[in-house]
Length: 148
Image 1: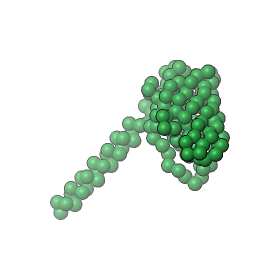
Image 2: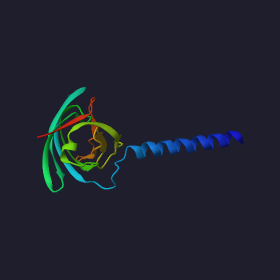
Image 3: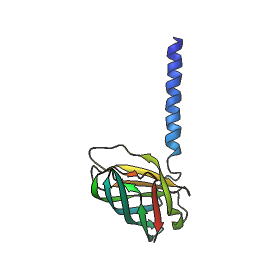
Image 4: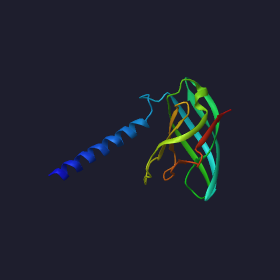
């Protein structure tokens, strides 16, 4: 009887830790304040190089940017089309910077696969590939966005 109680308590503690970890990676704003579209190309054979450009829509304006470091998990030459929502941004200048993964979506057979990432200013991007079967991830050093 005592062993069952201990195992039950450990299971509840593990669930609570998982919830706290998941909540910590989520955006602090309940709704997106910007929208991002991205077109990139990747050349990969083991280690790949990715470059691309995109548009940020924020407060009724469009801002153009370049991106390096996104990975589509493929070998060869791949065109990546993605779009997503932006959270926790006060100004468009906050969007630029180096991003690290906050959480990543699991691979699915149909539908988009997501990648949630955050920069040092707290901006969160929830990015999804437009193509079915493309799994987005960050390069070994993350992803870098520069405004044009």
